[in-house]
Length: 164
Image 1 (spheres, rainbow, N blue to C red):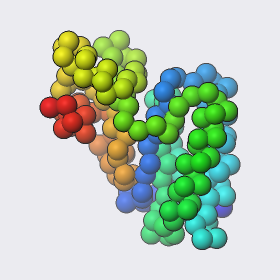
Image 2: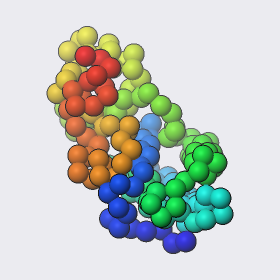
Image 3: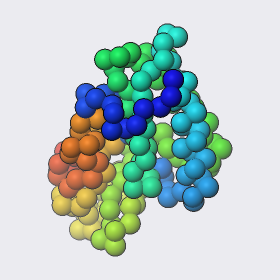
Image 4: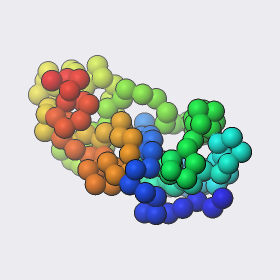
């Protein structure tokens, strides 16, 4: 099944968001997106093709959406997708699937990825805080990603709740 454009997926589509631990070189980015497109073009749940799309944002964030109304993904199909991403991690030498890291925009406009302990230390120093723009990778619906966006003040995300 050919990939749908991101804009054609319904707002209620299930979304997964992944962030790369570092910015990718153009060749790495193309390799990642080509491999994801190849997987998604043949993604199935119990033999049924999934209506899905992907979007690449900020040169760091992969969003994958599935129209659950047409055919919901199964646990096995989701596991297969995650395994394919982990294989890409190994091939590209860049983390993509890990959980718990915090992505934020620095005052210079760069995107930085830090572990929770580093965020906690920077917060104690006053280098980051409630108004620091963070990227919320916990979004689960396309409407959230499109209407609210990935980037919001820390206070409006899980980061604000976890480190209040």
